[in-house]
Length: 403
Image 1 (cartoon, rainbow, N blue to C red):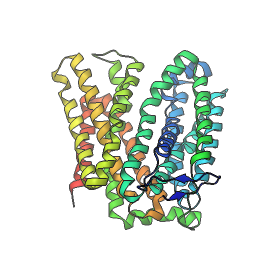
Image 2 (cartoon, helix red, strand yellow):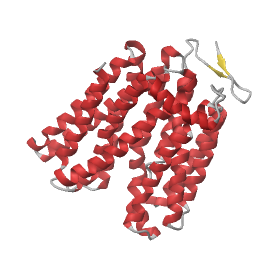
Image 3 (cartoon, helix red, strand yellow):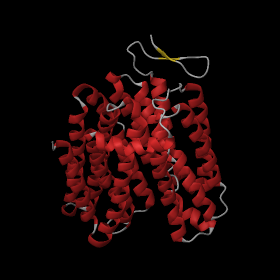
Image 4 (cartoon, helix red, strand yellow):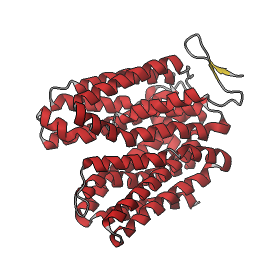
């Protein structure tokens, strides 16, 4: 039985097959989920905290913007450090910083302080993007897709369920309580990671400037990286266009539903995310290339089915939306697991930088989808959002099948 030695007395033992033990997988999945959830807690609470903290609607609207900006900057400028330093130390440092940032947000007396805290939350929440390459490093080649798929399920569940949890907590206990509870959860997670996560040796000695400069070189050198990033970025366009406009659409004709109903759709997406580990096993057995096409095809079909909404009654339209949400969330997760399996296999010594390139492109796709989706809904209605999402998925599928 092989072992991976941690910084304390008890070593972490691999299973006889060389696979990562289940408690470690659960710890990593929980870490990614709680880390990325910190980005989305504020969104359902904006109306409540705006009235209490005395900020204008426009100023409060910058809270999630600053969080996402911090996350994007962290992915680009901090995530590559995982190849240069022990990822365990980076993860623990970011967990401590995230805990402090969440407490600062919960104690903010003004919008200005809340915006600063939101930027810090985004920067520190990139611990999730350090945990995923750590999982890929710990996993043996034969089981990498399965392990990464399980850990990424935690990440997607964190995205989809965070809005549901924060909306409930803010409504019953106040928005400050949500930030304090989130900080407590991250503190407990940090202790668990300190006790359970092994040291991970650096794979490069490049200086920081050279480390960042190597991102462009990796992009130019590896066609597999470009294809994976471009395809997943296009899928993210549709994902973000749907979720950024859903609440507005449900609020109008013919549904007249509140924000809680839109948050409940996150549960439908979570149902699809739970099946994602199957994608990792499929990538291990059948190869990730095939799985990327299956995922992109499922996303395309799910968005195309939404085109039937004008032809069915309102109640059936809601059922169609739920089924489509399950389908495209599953498809996007399936494609992402396969793309990560491809990317992490390109150069084991550059996994953090390869991950940074992949997720920077994903973030660009999400930001683009949010902007285009809002414009499409305002000018041409929900069917335009559907067409945009389906078109982006079709382009992603074309990227995967075109040689």
